[in-house]
Amino acid sequence: GVARGTCATTSGVPSDVETNSPNSSVTYSNIRFGDIGSTYSGTASTTTTTSAASSTTSASSSGAAHYAQCGGIGWTGATTCVSPYTCTVVNAYYYQCL
Image (tube, rainbow, N blue to C red):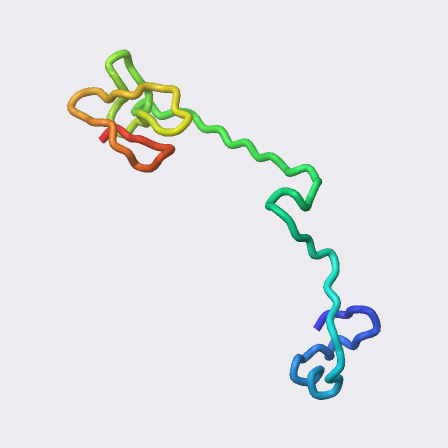
């Protein structure tokens, strides 16, 4: 166990507590209830990851290259693919030239 107040580190086995102290109770503190994001006002940390685009993902005036992204929620690049590839829905956020 872990030292907690005046309790011994060997205490806390549920069956022992129930047998030796049948009227005992546990009080939990710092429990928060509410909608997600409504119970904490701290500042969240931000992580930014960047990477260089591969030459196979660049778009040309004739459409996106094979395996490139060609659509999805928030996508602002090419929405057509070079021939013979077609823009295929992978998920709502990512369409790919396959």
